[in-house]
Length: 458
Image 1 (spheres, rainbow, N blue to C red):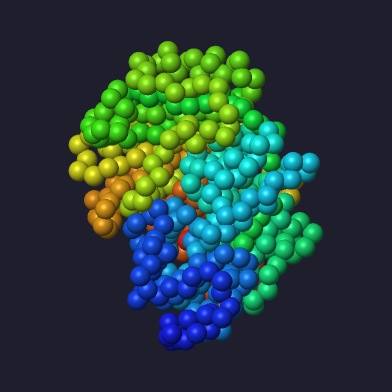
Image 2 (image 1 turned 30 degrees about the horizontal axis):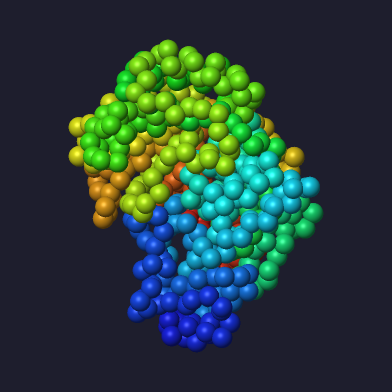
C-alpha cells in the first residue's frame, strides 16, 4: 500500500462523518491537537481527528484504510514512541467517560480517560482501579502495555484485570472482544500494545481498596539508602509496592526548600495491608539514612497521585528500560554516580520493585512479558529540542551496567522510538510470534501504527 492521498481528499471524506474537530497542518489548532505531554518526536499527521464518540474513530480508521494511509492514536501523549509522519492521528482526549458498576466491581473506561478520572469515579463506591503513579496518564494505553501500578505487587498488572475491550479495526468493524469472543485478539491486546486497532473503551475489574498507607521519603542519594532499599525490597511482603527515583533537583522556587539543589533519592511506597502496620513496614528505611522530607501517611486512594507527585507539564524526554532478574547494588551505585550533579543535562533513574502478584499468571492469560522480572530500571534523559549523542550514550551505558541480569524491556516505560528487535525484547519469542500472527490477521497492511509497533508476520 502507498501513502499518496492528499490531506484535502481525507478532509472531504471525513467532513460529513465526524462530530469532533478535523484539523490539518494549515489549521489554527493543529499543533494543540497533535501535541501530548511528550514534546520530543511529536506526531506529524496529515489529518488529526479529535474523536468524541466511537463512530468518529470508525470514520477516521475507515478513511485512512480507504486512502491507504497509516493511522495512530494519542490519548495523553505521555508514552509517544514512533512518531506518525503523514496519515491520520486520532486523538481521544474528548472520549473520557467513566462508568462504574459497583455491584460487579467494574468500570467502563473510554479511550481518553486519564487514570485520575477512573480513580475518582471508583472511589465514590469504595473501590479502586489498578492505576499508575501519574494520574494524568491515559488509562487505556497504559493498560494495553501491561501497566505496573501503585498496588501491582498485591494485585498484578492492570492488563490482568481487563474484562473486555471495544476497538475499531482497519476493516471498519467495531469489535467487542473478551475471553469468549475473539479470544486471540483479547489475549494480544492485554499487554501487546496498540498495534491491533484503535481501542475505544475497556471494562476493567476494580478492587475493594479505599485507603492505603503511602507517600514518599526523600534522602540524599548515596550508598546507605541504595543498599537499604535493596535489602528492604528483598524481604518485602506482597502488600508493599514501592519504587525509588534518583535525580538532581534544581535550586529554584517551587521545589521544597529541604530538597533544592540536592541529588536526592525519593522512595515512594504504597502499603495495602492493615493501615496501622504501615509505619512499621517503612521504619527500616527511616533508620537507614537521614530523612530530608517525609510525606508518608494514611490517605484515601483518591489522593494516590500525590504519592509519586510526578510532573504533569509537557516536556521532552527519552528513556532506556531494563527488566532485571536481580539488582546488583554495585551497578546501581555506579549508575547513580554517573547521573549525578556533574551532568550538563537532567537525568532521572527510576527503579520499581516487581514480583508478588506480577509474577503470577492471571485467570485469563494475556501477552504481558517477563513476569519473572524482580526489578525494573528506567534511565530517562530530558531535552528541550532533540535527543543528543551524550544522552543516548548515558542510556546505553546504563544498560551495559546491568547486562548480566537483563531479561528484556518494558514497553510502557520506553519513551521514544524502538527498533523492531528492541520491541521483540519485551516478550518471550513464542509470544512475539503469536502477536505477529494476530497483527497479520487483523491488520495485514500494517496501517495501525502503535507507539511500539508489532509487525505483521510475513
